[in-house]
Length: 378
Image (cartoon, rainbow, N blue to C red; front, side):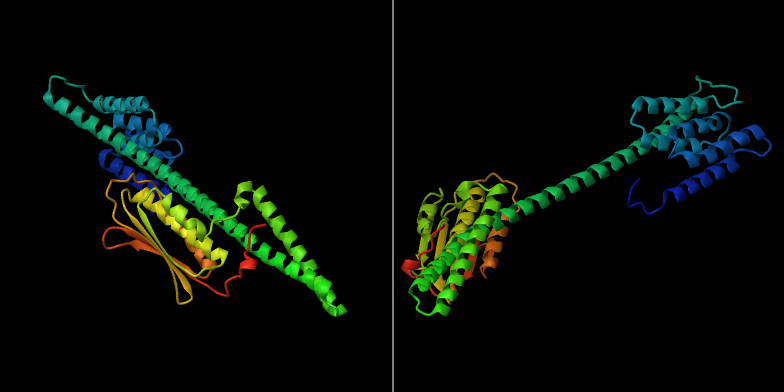
């Protein structure tokens, strides 16, 4: 029944039959053919104990009634207890074993006035009950193992679905942000190509400009088609609204419900993808402070140096007990994926004073866009 069983079931059954035969050899003489046949039948019937536990038990009862070989009956009783959930039936089987052993034929009968008789009956009942209790314990252990396996499988499946949901949501969001930026840049290319096509005097230059403009238009159509697919797969129309930038960061910090200080030292212009990564990192970090560090204060530092943007969100130790909610840090997983796509890193960990710190580092490549090239969502 257990996949991790070290000893095969048929080998165990063969060993039990062998022990039962030894019990017959020790307690039944060869000069008593009837009793010997009953005892041998009980011993051999143990080979059927897994498939027919009830029949096996009743085949062993005559041996208890006519012989002293009771090992096979106890094994059959134990096996029946491992399969049956009917407590009344098990109690009846214990009673039958006790009665059969008590009126062992051809004994003269029971002397209930003798204290030794009651002691014998008590030991017999305890032995039969022990076999039943052991069988019930094995059954409970088997049921518990199956239930734990089901729970573990369900937990693994739920974790897989959660991971897939988080990854799909983050990738869809990244795709929408890429659509905002790429669509704007391709639109600029199409406009410049159209202007070049109109103003160029060389026929070859006009043809090249027309080709570039046509390819740009096709690219825009494909981008819009992909966004339509994202929306059809469960996205909301509001998800294509303009995404937050650094200009929204003070409002985010002020509206977080946390005593937080914001320090920004950045160039005037940064790529929108970098701005959104900064915004999402601060947003997730402040959300975690609100959830897991009640009463703590936070400091948000955003700076630029060495060709990279550095964001640090640090909170102090909580001053009030917080409600511990189950969390697998999927928000941090999404931040790490976003940063990795932009060539950066996100690290996090506790501080020495009992607080927590989230650090983002993103490289800033290329020149900042000019004011007339301010990309806006299409």
